[in-house]
Amino acid sequence: MSNYTKQISWSGKDALSDSDPEKVISGGDFDTEFSAVQTAINSKIDGGTITNFTSTGIDDNATSTALEITTDGRGLSPFTARVWVVISGAGAIVDSHNISSTTRNATGDFTMTFANNLNNATYSRVGSTNDEGGSNAGDIGLLSFGTPTVSSLRIETGYLATSGSLVYWNYGTSTVIFGD
Amino acid sequence: MVIIYDNNGSLSVLTPAPKFLETLKGTLEQKLIHIANKDLPTGTPYEITDADLSDDVFFNAWEYVAGTNELSSADLSRLEQFNYNQIKIADLTDAEKAEFGVEDAS
Image (cartoon, rainbow over all chains, first blue to last red; front, side, top):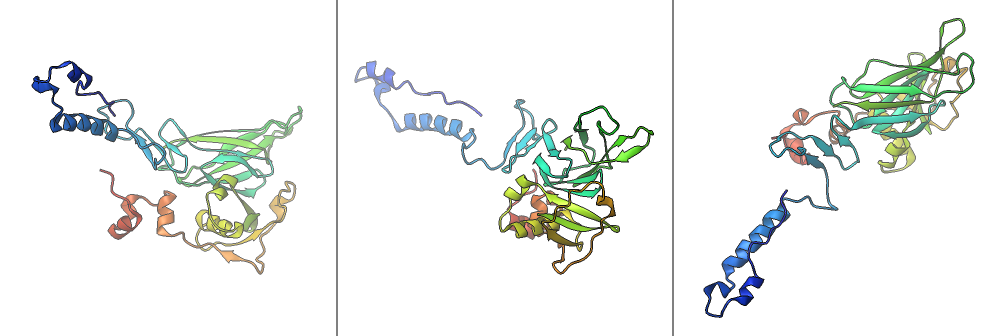
């Protein structure tokens, strides 16, 4: 992108004598000025009518897309979250981004399905359960992920009973995914 | 409303994401059918219900029993599959590329 810089000193012509050929405003002057305006405007992004925005970043020599912002509000890059979701203990989706549904397979066993598939399954996923309060076994939940796929990710939640065994149980959870 | 279906003899409950529902057109039932077609394997029998299935204690004992309103998930259109990134540009035919208005990355 480039900014517009005036090419002709229009007011400077006022001080020239009538006999000075530089006082004449020629068609060539208009061409020079409007060409500069055209070049600058055409290098800018159309505001208000952006469909998908892509950028190669701040390196003028970069050739690959570093960031794409889609019309449905997703930012596609290695440094933007591809998915995030907050699920209540009852399985309701409290809030989400790029999630189409969650499926309760069993107690403490959910599958989150992405609205738009990721490009590969080697994405980073981070999750946590909500603290249910209190100090008894089951008050603090555990969370683990199943094998990731490009379209979905399975979550299992539970707690360690005083006997030391794992008990599957529904906890409110939060999950964030970064990847391609 | 939720979608219920059989999961190897037990019940699975699919809850649509409210924000995703907002992106779809049609009645709530039409939106849920779209999500079933998108998120369930093709040919999965399912029902749409407004029953309260939030119980934790007995959830694993529940089973899916086909009712009179049972539906079956179908394939999404090729354009919908492409828009959801389920298929890539390389998977499209030349005719589909022209129809969908997409070009190969240069």
